[in-house]
Length: 444
Image (cartoon, rainbow, N blue to C red; front, top):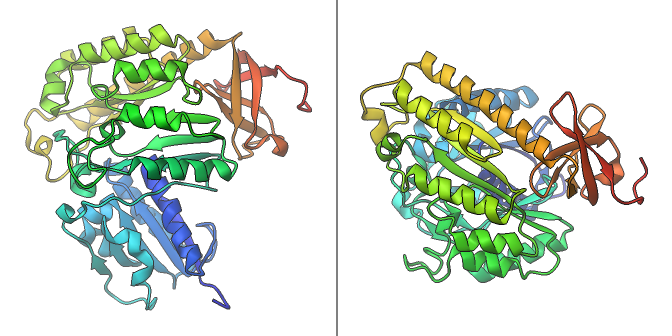
């Protein structure tokens, strides 16, 4: 293009969405488009949606308005989980021109022959049963860390979740392709790769278009650990029943994998776990945490929790609270249950009032702050390696240690995307950790 069209992207939701947005953005570049920031004037705005929570749904309209403010004549495209689940709803939003479903989003440039705005948005969305093929993706250039997609879809039937309806059946990238992508990322100078997917512990299923597991998640971890040039590998959210002790033990002695796990719990009450149709009881969760802490005492463990699920009495909630309070974990991600159409939970009785959900969320967020503070305090005086991020936040640069302690130091652009040995010194008023360098190569 002599005068290239400009395109901007906005991503809602998970690391998997970020990996796919980045890959889709590269396909635009290959077609001659110029990528710009979402706040800038662009010809096309692509919004990658999420539908895990009600809040993500509501944010979509706000983001469309931001795009219209930047250029009222721009062509606005919606992709992602919400676009697959409720394409008509998105198409009705003022300013939206094109809605693409789970399969169509990867062929987005094929739908751009005419960028003329009309009164009605076009919808191209397959039946989710047709989303049975795998598309590789990874993020690059958006953040210091790269998100590497290794798996997509889910065969679990959790009663609150719409993700199987939005992303289809569980399927995996071929092992050789994952390794190739990891090598490509490393060659670009990225220091840390985060493995992502919908249910990454199910890796191997659908790798060659069938349900048989040609490889396991442990096979994947072992193979990635041998890839040269990768400084750090981090496992994103993984189901407790799929995080085997063998994987935990391997990570403890691996070359590249860091001591950080994010393991969804959702409830500390076995009765609620059964109603959710989770595939474990809390006793298994306790065993996984104990195993991690036995072989990696300084490991960071994050937990997802849902409060206010139908039937969650005060007794069941306090069971969750006390269970988490006694567990040796590092932080919580707390979600207030929100009804999702076409899920069994939406039809359940014993609805928990919104004000009660809000109160319970607040209690668990307070517990999370306490847990994070205690974990940070336990790490003071210990030595770690920090990877610095790329953003100047009020005169400071932030970074994360391998075990996910967030640190800060005065802004220095030379630190961006560099690794340094440090000793954690003290927690400041922001709840972040200050440190001393263990080498003299950095000007401070």
